[in-house]
Image (cartoon, rainbow, N blue to C red; front, top):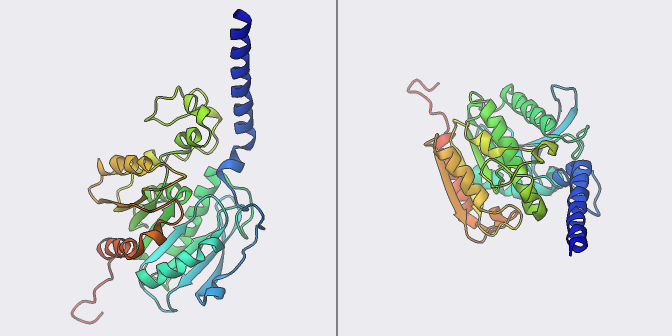
Length: 308
């Protein structure tokens, strides 16, 4: 009996140790997936393929990494809202072009699509601190442009992009008008137990019962729930209830955390929305929700009586 229990103990211990070793060694490859299986790192298409008016933009982050982005306009002189778009963790910005094409049509906006470091044509390797710097470089670029209304910059982020957007919005209350989060997680610490269930006993965020013994090994914790609590600008939460990647209750927790301090929060559920297709399955209701939010919190400036 003792031998059996000992063997079981060592067996379970060995599995945990092996799992932790894999997590330490390969966690960036789990969190950041610039290249989808079977595809190349390069862009499969450009906005030109979809007849979009765009500009190739090259930026430099504060730590010297060269970054690439596409700035897509509805038309050359469009002064509508500008969406700073942050993608999910897998693939590159080209894989989001169809959604962005419809976004521009429905919302009458410009869209700035940033390639995180290590993604698409951007140089470097992805990390949390690095991507935070990349997002800041993109916002600083937009804020310095003279061909857009810089008072109407709205951040949009889905999944990982929501975590990026929440940090950026928190850090820039004077540059970002509003924030839109879609199917975003509370933290990577909480997602560790979703992706690898045995880890939920050792890694977790502040709202879990995890012992948190191994939180220190996570190099990209992305604590969205902490960042969203400090966002003062209006926030729209878009939650797909069929999300197969991020449990929908993560979005409810983010909303509850934000709304406790910020009265300008709106939560909308889409019953058939999955992780990547909420914008598609939500149909006109999805786009109407976004348009109403933009009209309220990033409105067009009215000319005064003198015509200025």
